[in-house]
Image (tube, rainbow, N blue to C red; front, side, top):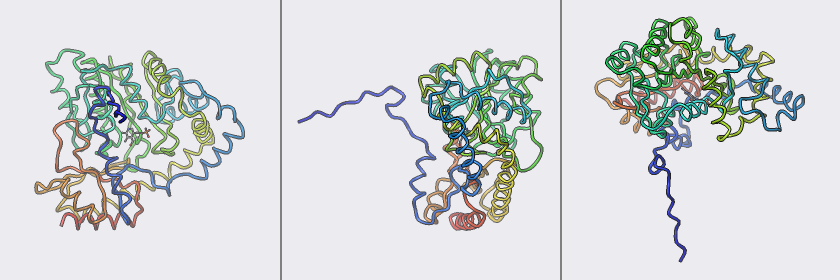
Length: 400
Ligand SMILES: Cc1ncc(COP(=O)(O)O)c(C=O)c1O
């Protein structure tokens, strides 16, 4: 009789819990399902022609760049294009401080590798992006949630939390200041400045995750934390900025980037060497060609208009559910955050919603601590306008 091998796992993987959102994927195959669950760009908003042209140019003009390994920090052409993109976003950065990552998700993973040790205290918004919670938990970090409201992270609550702690008590704060996942909230300028001042006073690094900032469909653009750091005494060098082409071009490219102070960026490059050597040079060259042709600037207005129409449709429909659900209207991004009224639990509504063929994400997945069981996240990104109407009708039936 052959003996079964007994696997010995690293402590963090002895009994790991996977992503709660990925668990919902099994319901997506249910025929006729309408999903408000994932933050997936809709097929109709991909610039397929622009990307096909960029892909054709990439292979015709630079076949060896596409087919060969590349420098770990990224193809020079793409880094230059991303530097120009950051400048257009009002954030001039040094080329040396910018590296390409395999999605912004990898940027976060590299930062955890080079900056954090088990037991280090990390501040996160409550609620926040679950893959960040998962990555920090796997790294053995001690998570501390910071309260948020309709305007995002409460700097007042943070100041109270920090008061009385020694400088350096928390190593890092992770936040999504512009159109957060899951709340859609956008941090106002005064809070951005207050957050930077707190980082300087209490000596922590800020990781600013910004995959959604370009998807603003209402109101005025705000400078990123990275762009503001020089305006706050002592805050310079305390911000790492992560961004991505996933939500504005295509997640399938797996192209993101990090801008970080040189000592951090250099160490992240070394960490990346053992992860994937380099982000797919083929995908990088396609992205570079796409950006160099000005295709993102051309496509962005249609993309933003598409999301505006979807958000408005969803908010109009949600007005009809106001007796059941309180929501915060976003100014950009892909998400609407809601709270069930009358003590109703989102998980119970979820069970009934699945029976009615509509999906959303119960909010508990987004909390590192003190989950709000009434909360839920709806994404208007993937479904078409009619599907949004129909999905909300089904949601009403689930509440009823
Ligand atoms: C806040 C946030 N950060 C990072 C990511 C991952 O993005 P990428 O595809 O660039 O890895 C997502 C994806 O949903 C996200 O919502």
